Length: 138
Image (cartoon, rainbow, N blue to C red; front, side, top):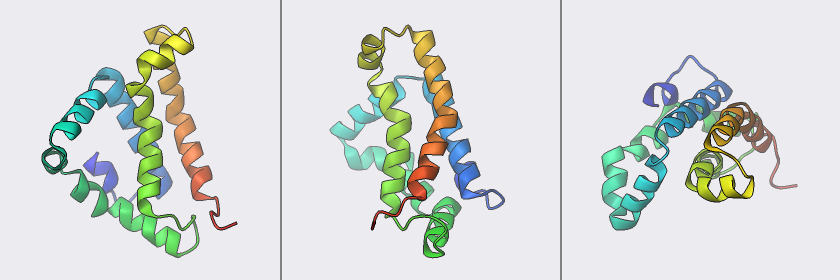
């Protein structure tokens, strides 16, 4: 993921597409990762954040620099960067966390759920783009 965050040759939109796709592939292959991380966060939040190195990876990345530059230039909505991160991660990770409930609600076998997650690879970047093109002050 660090390569995608720090690639200075790709657009913000391309980075979002890559990150969404890579995270969904990772979580489809390892669906217990979100619950493991949640468990670790509950037990010792500062330790898991430090071990993963997510703060430096995200907040000091070229991705974040691009986000701030585009927001300052008026190309995208001026939202706090954490709104962007929360929305993107929530759309990716929550379905895996809530998989038992969602699969039960929709009578979805695991393969159908996985197919839906593959569809989200295209849908999430579209939703993120719509969020970034929304003026929250209107």
